[in-house]
Picture 1: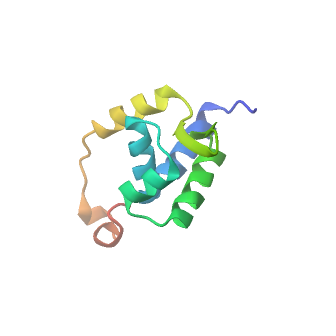
Picture 2: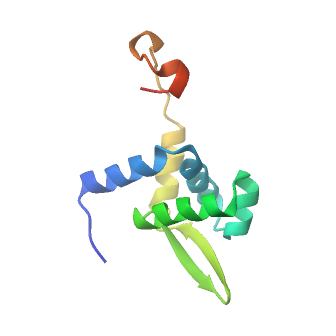
Length: 109
């Protein structure tokens, strides 16, 4: 296991949140652990797509796979991630579409 610096942790968290599907996975796991089949159904994504995103989130160190017999359950790697997501959801942003050329297309800068 590797211990990461603060900036590396934030970079990994930012990378995970940069994709809408990964963000939705993290938000779903914030509420409770889940099995891939449940997550795929909740998020209405294919199991292959979900598998790829879960692999990314595992690689970033944000989720862990917990074996349960023949099944694998996924959960956030640290309860503090749930708190961080909750705090981020409470942030109010003041956006200025005139200063972001891609705002209409991408929804952000």
